[in-house]
Image (cartoon, rainbow, N blue to C red; front, side, top):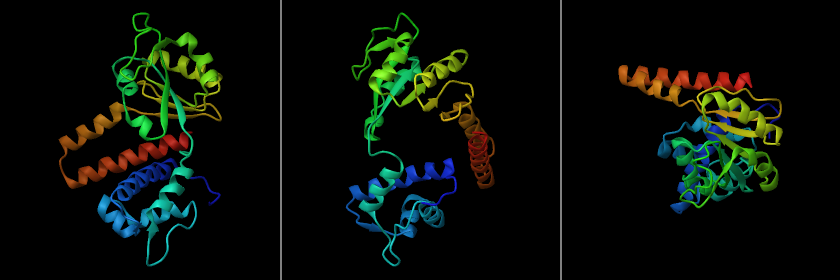
Length: 232
């Protein structure tokens, strides 16, 4: 693996490549070239080769990549060889939808705790059978269950407090859906998911339905992601 810092955009693309490889493996494909993979999944072959080169030599010239071996390597690179325990804080409409999302288990993530401040919600159970607990129990649960990732889906005015609580409990990875940008402390990774920015990009596309407009939206999104990564 190269020693230079790997950008978040690169690791995001690795996740895309893994999904593509999963689909190829399910179809019985044993080997694939970057060109074929790019054509089938609307990717960029040169970008595939460049991204993978950060982590080693995977392909064989004239043959391509062994699908199963590359899948195994990407799973290891992305830290998916172990199940990551997740807690969700804030069980409003969004938090509840996330709690009931079955895709977490398919991606090697297990939601083991749900937390909220609303007394009317405490003790209720989701479709998966998890009981909603008070946020007062959050710190103990993180340490007891070995929770590594916390999803924040609380109102903006409560997000900073929740972030401080979970990082003090030892959590180093946070996915923030609250409508406020949260700054990470040293040693902590906060991924801010801003639904408004995504919706505004789609609105721009609707207002400017040309191929150039699509490219502009894509470039602005990538610029925003790169800037957010540099700020961290």
